[in-house]
Image (cartoon, rainbow, N blue to C red; front, side):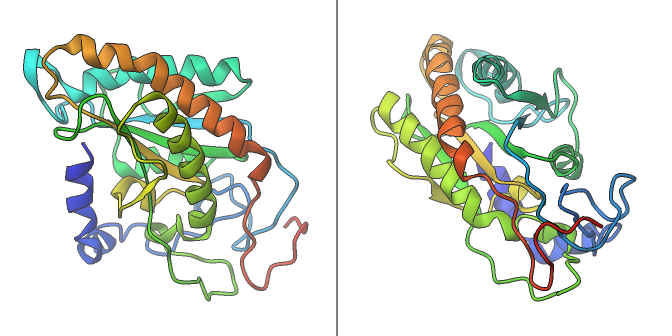
Length: 258
């Protein structure tokens, strides 16, 4: 659940130290870290590339069950079913969908981000179910605005990978949230801003979608939301598609490949 992730985000300094194995990851136009086999330069370029991949992240997994509610509802398990319907709706719109987990495994935060960072033409969507909140609603979260990156070499810290994409993430979040608000009364009209840990290390337009809640009286209430959530996300991503561009860092000439 996002409450756990938001708490982790408040310990940014500690987490940054914990990511010391990749303290200065460099991202190319493909979004891959410099020390990744697919990276070939420490600068960004801006090749013509369209949005064609959605990396879908059902949160939690393994021994991390996430939020737990009535009728033995476990967030990590229900999210796999939400993800299956979201994947189907996105594929019907022509997107390739990659999931960070397909079963009860629990990839690390970095592994989940790396799944998106290695792609070209991708967005990242992490799914959650809240432990509280108005049942039958859904909210989209994006990272707060970040200070500009001043390193003209294009090198950015791993834990600031989201910084160049914040504007795009806000646009994607608003488009998905508008679709959710149409389908679920009581949902906010626009995306909310919060320092979600999973988004911070993702070098792509990235949002978190949180459904309320595991505290419903019956599991059937969540099941009934699945088709609407799937359609809202798919239609929101389609609406965002024409806006998708790759950011260019200062000092990098657009269109130049390393």
